[in-house]
Every structure is written in C-alpha cells, then in structure tokens.
Length: 233
Image (cartoon, rainbow, N blue to C red; front, side, top):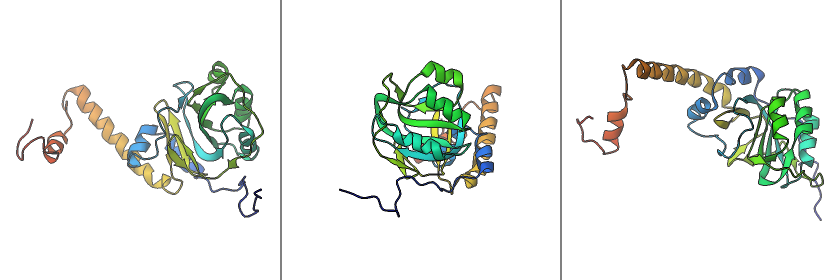
C-alpha cells in the first residue's frame, strides 16, 4: 500500500501563471505564428482540434492527469481554477468515454475559464458549439465518465505529445493548440510581431505579382546541393 506524502500533494493549489498582460498580447497572434517563433516546438498533435473552427483560446494552463474514462480530477481542478485559466487534460487519448459534456462546460463558462483542451473525448457537441466556450478535443463519444479514480492536478502532463507545465501559456485556434513555456512567453512576443509583419509583406508581394517566389529559394537550393554555386532557377 502506498501513502501520499504531504510534500507531494496530488492537487497543487498554488502555481505561477503566465502574466495576464502576456496572455492578452499572445491572444492577438495565430497559434501557427507562436509555434514558428518558438522554433516549431510546443504544437500539440493535430488530433486535438477545436469543436468548432471559430473557437480561439489563450490563457495559463491548469494541468490535469486522469485515468482513461474517469473525470474525478477534472472536477477537482475546476474547484481551484481561476477566471482566465485553461484546463489542459491528459486523458491518454482515450475515446471510449467522454470526459466532459454540456454540464461541466457550462460550469467552466460560468466560472470565466478561457477554455478546455482534452487529449480525449467530449460529448454534447452541438450544445458545446452553441455555448461558445472554446473546447479542443480528440473526438467525441456519448458514453459518460466515471468519477472514482485519483489523478493529479497541476503536475506536468503530456498532452498531444507535448509536455505542459502548470501556468504555461496555451493558445488555440482553427489550426490547433500550441503551448509556450511560461518563462519564455514574454520574450517571444516581439518575434511574433515581426513574423506577422514579414508575412504581411510577403503576401502583398504575391498578390501584387511583384514577388511570386520566395527570395531565399535559390540560396536554400544551393545549400541543399540541388543547385550548383552561382546557379539560379
């Protein structure tokens, strides 16, 4: 028999969150922009998608680890979550039972949570789309969960193949979800703004017909050995 040490509580109530002003600035960028400036790290597996393509979220992570098909610890996490938080749930990718549905999502919205990310299933999808709370999941299943098995809240979790720490920045949109380490988030905002400016300029060049291929292409082809030195397309 194992016993729980007070030094390692299964539910950690106090965490350091990415600052609200950083969340507000990051919310202005696409998840794809943030993933690119984060050296193409932090994007969750593409199996985790928005219940409705228009859904967008940004906020600090409240991490939850559950056993497949059991949502006891999600209820525990919601009891300590704050407005603006994002529930990030390691459901082990299980699709045999939904972990959340309309009742819990209505509770989450009433609490002011920024959204939910589940590596698992949800249900009541039509109601969730009408509710408008951003929800990202692997899929759906009409089976309900049990509420019996212990897990962890605000410990590191693996969601969509990516490690998420409590308080990390979570941004999601129609392209998917990206997680940015809390300590790095502020430093990436300038690079994200510059990337948006660069891409806007590139799109203008394409639409105007002034630059119909990237300026870096020949150099990259020479570096890869596809073109000889001094040769161009």
